[in-house]
Image (cartoon, rainbow, N blue to C red; front, side, top):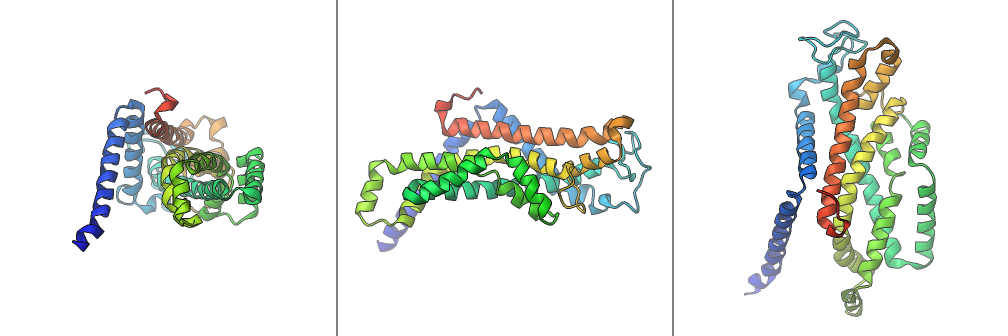
Length: 302
């Protein structure tokens, strides 16, 4: 009987979570734009994960390039070749791994920082919250892209630097949203009861506040990935990323240096540009659908 009492609440909690996930998926499926975005993301994820099998890591080498420089699209090279004679289709496929990984990790870092700042500022309040919010306001006033460029310029050029530069400059919006939600949650009666029963700060924030702000955090994460992918492409285009890796923004920078715009080599510019736009749009569509499901009062058009 003791075992049933111990495992019963856990089983009940898992059942509630499964029902909640099933309900979420039923509502998400009613958003056609969200389904289109999810399908596009699944396709890009599959392409990125299978890149070592489909194109191989040798596609990035410049010493044994299979074609001639700046060769137009043909049967052998569907997207043409770059200035070194490398297959652009393979480069775009391989670049998806870096662009998606950096965008995802930078968005996660940004949302984690914003969530921690928002929850602690909403819970403790007082002078601590005032200082945090003034720092947040300063980051909101300063252009995030300019700060990211400054950080990427003074730090070593690497993927870690790009992730850090994006993550530490794009968290203020998340912090503001989470703090507002934290204040709303902590005004509810059951929070007062938890405090009266001896619940400490960590218990209140982790057991009561965090679960209630997680839907907002999830929606914000999907939206942040879109902007992180665009920022990563911008930093790579400016030559502030790791020059030894292939990314969509790096391909655009290579095309600029090769004079693809002035010479009319459109195949050098269009494929990575379209890939960046499609991925950013797909994440935005998914984010808006998630936001609409979690907060129907927004009235996001389906």
